[in-house]
Image (cartoon, rainbow, N blue to C red; front, top):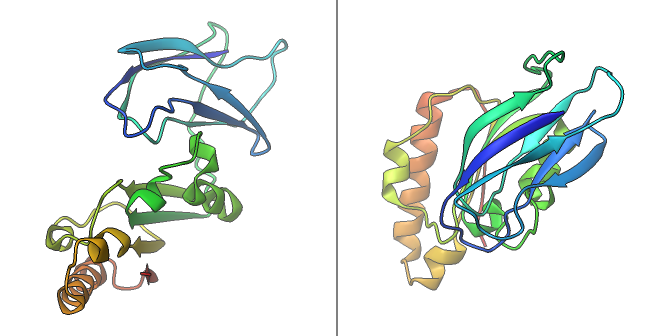
Length: 188
């Protein structure tokens, strides 16, 4: 078994479900149904000892701080490093998965699983193509980067020229940090 203890922050939507993907095939759900300050429970259980690959996906709609991960006394655990690529996904609520009831149902999770990618989802509900994004580029490894903005920008009457300048600044900053990594930018 694998047990986790989580501290749940203020949610953007009242979905707290987490997922366990077992051997890249089977998906189970764990986690609280309503918002607790702290939740402790079982993320994975099996009757007989057997080697498994377990991928834990934590709530995507509330800050979820991992307090502890415990395994059964006779079990062993090691990191799985079998991802084909590392994907950094910038975006707004669409990238965050705002209306998905479980993290595994978001479009970045579906794409990541299809591509065997380790996704760093930087999608935040309400986000716009802020100028600050060009000054806070991650330094982690990346094999592909996507940025999906525009819905909130255009709803807030950001002039298209300002939007274009912000997009170019972000792309320039990303290109400086990741000179050979494909960058995909989408907008409505």
